[in-house]
Image 1 (tube, helix red, strand yellow):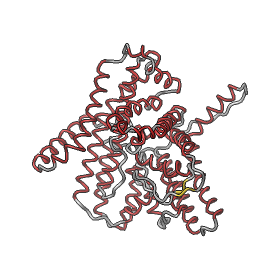
Image 2: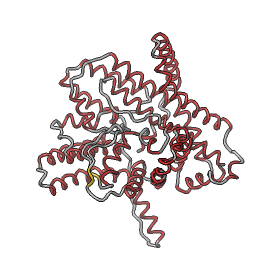
Image 3: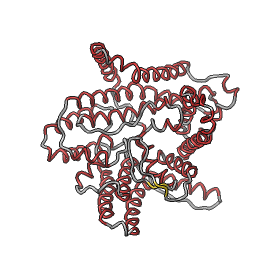
Image 4: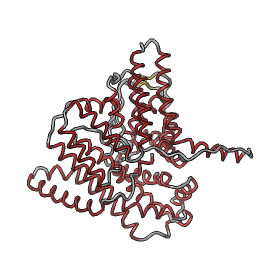
Length: 488
C-alpha cells in the first residue's frame, strides 16, 4: 500500500476513526493489526522478517538490562547477537547479490574459472529503516540510555508503526514509545494539522515529483557521451528536486498521518537546498538518518562514547572520548557505509565518498573562514553549496560508475558548455523550480509571520491555498510510481 493511492486514503480514514472511538486498552492492538495490514498489502510473508528482528531485539535488550555492567563480556556478546541477526538479514536481502556479482567479476579478472550462483532475492520494503530502529533500541539499552520495554505489544508497535515503517523518519524508542503508551485525548487541531501535512505531501508527490520523473528518466537514459555540461547540470538539478519532492512528500504524509492520531514523529527535512555549507545541508536533509549515522556510527568510529542522544538532528550530548579521536578516518568510513546503505551499487559508495571529500575540504578551510569573516556570508555559502550538492545526485541516479564519471567529467570541460541536447522546456523548468523553492522558503520563513498578524487575510489565503491543492491533487492522484526511498 502506497501513500499516493485511494486505497491508503480509505485505509487511513478507517484507522483514525477506530483509533478515536475504541477503548484505550485495545488501541495498541488495533494499530499493530493495521500496521500489519498496511505492510501486508505488499507481501504478507515478509512480515515474518520484521517479527524476527523485533523479537530478537526485545529478548536481547531485556537480557542486556538484567546483566550487571560488571559482566561486560556477556553484555557485549548479547549486543553482538542483536547486530548479527539484524545486519545478517539486511546483508542477505540487500547485499548478497551485489557482493556475489563482485566476487564473480574478481574471479573472472584473475582468470579463476569459478563463479557463485544465487537465485533472485526480493528486497523487503523498509528493511533498511526498521533495521536501524531496532539496532538503535538495543544499543541505547546497552549504553544505559533507556530501559527496555516490558510489553512486547508496545515494542512491536514501535517497530511496525505504519506511518514511518517503509521509509522513515527513523525513530528512536525514547521518542515514539512513550507516546504509544499514553492515553490520547482527542483535539481538533490534530485533524487540522494532520490533514494539512497530508495535502502538502500528496501535492509534492503527485503534482511535482511524478511529473519531473519522466524528464529525469529520459535524460539519464540518454547516451552520457552525447550530453553537454549544461545538460548534466540540468539533470542534476531536476533529479535533486525530484528526490527532494518525492522523499519530503513521504515524510509530510507520515507526519500528517501520525498527527491525526495525536502522535508526533520528527521532521525529516528543513529546506535543505537553502543550506550554506555541507554540514548545514546534512542538518536539513534526511535529518533522522544523518543524526542516526552520527550517534551510532560516526561518533563510535571516532573513538567517542555517547552518553545521551537526540534523534531530531540535535548534537549528541554527554560525549566522552574513550580512545584517540580520528575524525577524518571515521568521516570517510562513515560516508562510504552511508552510501552503501542507500543501495547495493558502487555508485552509492561513490556518492558517499563524494560527500565525505566535500565535508573534509570544508573542515580544512575552516581556519581561512575564521580569519576572513566575509567568507562566512550565507549567500556566498549557498551559491557554492547548492551546485556542489546538486552535482552529487548524478552518481546517486546514474546506472553505473562509468556513466557517473562521464557525466560529471563534462562539467569540467569548457567546450561542453557550447551546446545543448535536451528540450528547451527542461532548462526552463529547472530555473522555475529553483525560483519557486526560494520563494516558498521566503514566504514560509519571512512573509507568513506578517500574514498571520491579519487573521482575515490569513484565513482567506489558507482557504484559497488548500482549495487549489485539493483540486491539483485530485487531478493527478494516481499511483504512478512508488516513492524513491522504498527501494532503500
